[in-house]
Length: 417
Image (tube, rainbow, N blue to C red; front, side, top):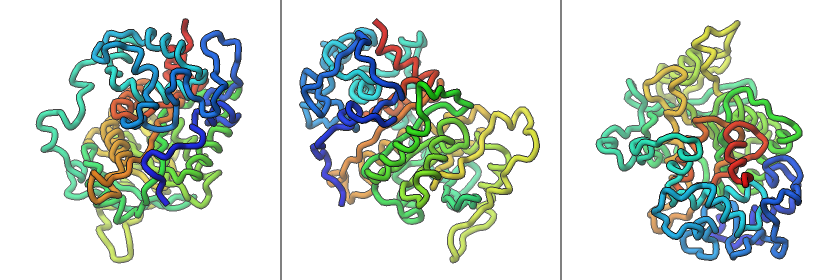
C-alpha cells in the first residue's frame, strides 16, 4: 500500500545516518571525528532534530510543515538578497545546526537553497558569471513550447524496443530531448513498461570517467550494497546517466550483484548523440523492424560491441550500461562529445514530474507527492549543472565526501572556517 503524503517517520534518514555505520549513512565512508571544531552533534534527539527545531530529513521539505523549515532559510533576512555570501550561510548553519556530516547538511540546506538563487550562489563560489538565459526554465522560454515533441529529430515517432544483453533484456525508448514527461508516461512508461509508482526516487549523479576513488575515503562496495538495499526496502526507482562509465557503471554493477531479480527499476537517461556509432546504429535499427503483435522490436547488444582500438573521435563516446532495466535515450540531432548534457533539462523535468505523482493520479488535486533525492558522487562541470537544475525544482542533494572533484569541492565549503 502507498504511504500517506507526509508520513511522520519514526526516524529520519539523517537520524539513521547519525547511528548507522553503513555507507549511505556516512557518505564520506570514514568515521566521524568529534574534534573537528566545526560542529557538534545534538544527541538529545534520536531523529537528528536541529537545535532550533528544524529536522533534517530524506526528502523534499513540505511547504505545509513549518517545523521542517531549514535553518538556512532563516539565516537571511531578505530571501531576495542574491548577494548573500555562501560562507555566511554556511557559518550561520553551522552555528545553528547540530549535524556534522555532508549528507545531512546538504539534504537540509540545498533543498531550501533553491529559494536563494542557487545558480548565482554556485557561480560566486567558482568565480563564474551565470547568464540569465542559462538559468531560465524551459517552460518560460519563448517559443519553446512549439518545439516540444516526443519523437526524435528526423523521425515520425519514438522508438520503443528492447535490447538483449548477455545478462538479460532491457527496455528502451528513443525520444526527443525536448519530450514532455507526461506524454512519455502515456505512450511508453505506463502502457509498455508497466512501471508502478515508486515510494522514493534515487537519482545518482557523478563522474563518467575513470574515477580513482580511495578505499580509505569511500567504500564503493558498501555504498553499492546500501544503495540497492535502500531502494528495495522502499520500493524506489534508481535513476542514472545510463552509460557504462564512472558512477553509472558502479550503480549498474551494484544492481546486478544485489538485485538479481530486478525488483528495482534502474532507469538510465542518456544522450543518443553521446553514444558510439555502433550503439546509435543498433538502437535506431528498431525503426526498421516496425511494430509486431509478438511484442516490442528487439535489438542485439552484441552488434554494438567495440572490436579493436576505437578511433580518437569514438574514444570520447559511450556505451549503455547493460545492467539497467530501462533506458530513456534523448536525441537532439547533435552527435559527438558535445552531446553530453543535452538531456539535462529533460532529466530535471522527468524527475520533477515523477515527484509530483501526476502520472498515477486522475487530477493534480489528488496527486500524491513522491519523495526524491539526488546523490552526487565525484563529478565535474556537468554534474554541477545537473545538481543546480535539481535543487531549482526543490530536489534535495546529497554529496558524498571523499569521492573527489566537484563533490569534495562542495563539501569543503562547509568545512572552511
